[in-house]
Length: 85
Image 1: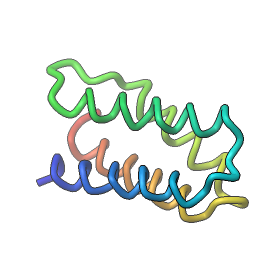
Image 2: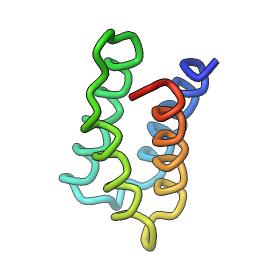
Image 3: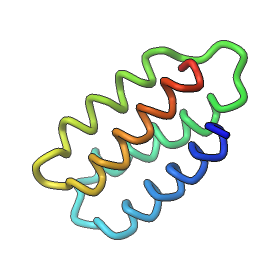
Image 4: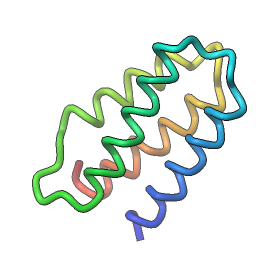
């Protein structure tokens, strides 16, 4: 169940990125990299614990300017925690 939730949240993140083209290139690339890393970790035997920290840092970074992105990232952090990442 958390794996399916994670996939849905990743889709929400991709959709939100499409709706926020005003993000600078660095932020866009970082979020895409995080999304790719999360997708790659979903089936990994040894999850990357730094990944959760990266997602959490981006959620904090986007809190004021992009609350929608921040909310999605926080949901992803919660889901990653539930699946042991």
